[in-house]
Amino acid sequence: MSKKDPREHSRAVVDGVTRAPSRAMLRAVGFTDADFGKPQIGVASTWSQVTPCNMHIDTLAKAAAAGADEAGGKSLIFNTITVSDGISMGTAGMRYSLVSREVIADSIETVVEAEGLDGLVAIGGCDKNMPACVMAMARMNRPAVFVYGGTIRPGAERRDIISVFEAVGGHAAGRVSDAQLLEVERTAIPGPGSCGGMYTANTMASAIEALGLSLPNSSAQEAVGDAKLADARRAGAAVCALLEQGIRPRDILCREAFENAIAVTVALGGSTNAVLHLLAIADAAGVPLELADFTRVGEKVPVLADLKPSGRYLMSELIAIGGIRPLMKTLLDEGLLHGGCLTVSGRTLAEDLADVAPYPQDQTVVRPLSDPIKPESHLVVLTGNLAPDGAVAKITGKEGESFRGTAKVYGSEEEALADILGGGVAAGQVLVIRYEGPRGGPGMREMLSPTSAIMGKGLGDSVALITDGRFSGGSHGFVVGHVAPEAAAGGPIAIVEDGDEIVIDARRREINLLVDDEEIRRRLDSWEPDTHPAGAVLRKYARLVSCASRGAVT
Image 1 (cartoon, helix red, strand yellow):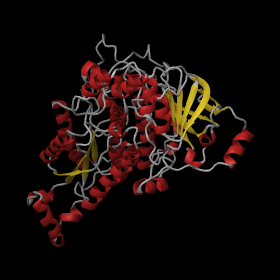
Image 2 (cartoon, one colour; image 1 turned 90 degrees about the horizontal axis):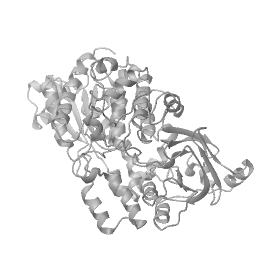
Image 3 (spheres, helix red, strand yellow; image 1 turned 30 degrees about the vertical axis):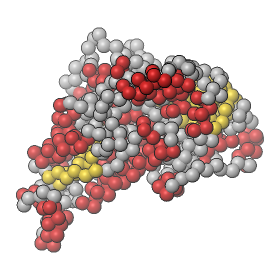
């Protein structure tokens, strides 16, 4: 960390006689003579009308810009794309979801580097644009702060988007009528904000705060309200302070910071997608991080938060009792967080948490360390002959810690969903959905529709599902994703046959196909890859993308 010229990048764009054309263009967007001597602060907005998660972010972007301007910078707002997992889920369009993470990161880097911006506020509000923002921050290593768009308020009867997905399964089972399904559909999403449980958006917001890249409490705020506007405004000012102090993302993103993010994710019972995204962020920051690190940290950290999808409470209810900071203070005091890590506040994590009060004594959202929901991580990395390079399971303990069953194999999510809803799935089966990995999808779709259908049909405790795709943060049950190598790369999941026995053992962290090695080799020798139709973007992604065990980065 060293103090540098706050105008290191913009100076080359606007200073001097030869830069008169650049200044002329900037005058047209509102620059005055005085503005050319100020550091330029980009505000990357993911505002969009294509999803409620991001429909309010234009307001937050304006607040961040005002904060930067008030602190002596000159703000410039620019947009990047987003897509909605919830809307595209279960369709071919979902193949573009993880791809969008790379596109968003690339687009932010493109604008900031091309325009010579000195610092950055990045505002994200949905699953992929959030890690994308942080990946771009890590790549460019210019002073930057991330702002979370905030969580949605609960719908009627504490409903959320997962209520709708599971109601579809209940409808197929005959337990939910047409009128009831319509009522759930109409009342589940009341307005702006990210999905309301400890799903991927709230998981990543919490992980990013634990990394030190957002201001204290940014991750535990509702999307609508004065607190969120103030958070955005403070972020703009904070970037100017970071410029003066010479603090950059890679000064913050050390290995210990990633261990903090893993620990907080575990304690909150967060999404399996955190594994994929933290690996990708670490790659962008040049920090070594492997699947084994999630196991190592997870062995020491208990699951404490009783949050949906596996638990009872919504993010808004966690916010009401103080958010994630009392939890982080508990973990710090127990020696489960590295307090010396720097944050975008300019202070260490321990300093940020020094005055945090504990949760109210009568709250039931977060359990004490003496009475955890699970004594170690729910994010279980499995290996075995079915996943030589690893797989990620979400095992809270409520679904048991082992499963043995017979395989029923599908070549796509659509095949599996139709069979589940049509009554073709029975207790004791392990559903195998393959050719949904990063290369094979292409795009590594989330299997929320099948997992929700299983739950809605009342099969959550008797059917397991494994896939080389991934899961929504809203998925729960006995599910294993990120199976690597994926089917399209010739991984053993490609040669599983109907009726094969599969054993999943979370205690031993193993996933095995009960077929002898010689037979596995014979099947692999005769294997021919399957393919899904793919447009130009997906074909390019498939050529570039890495294995899920490395974060599926391009």
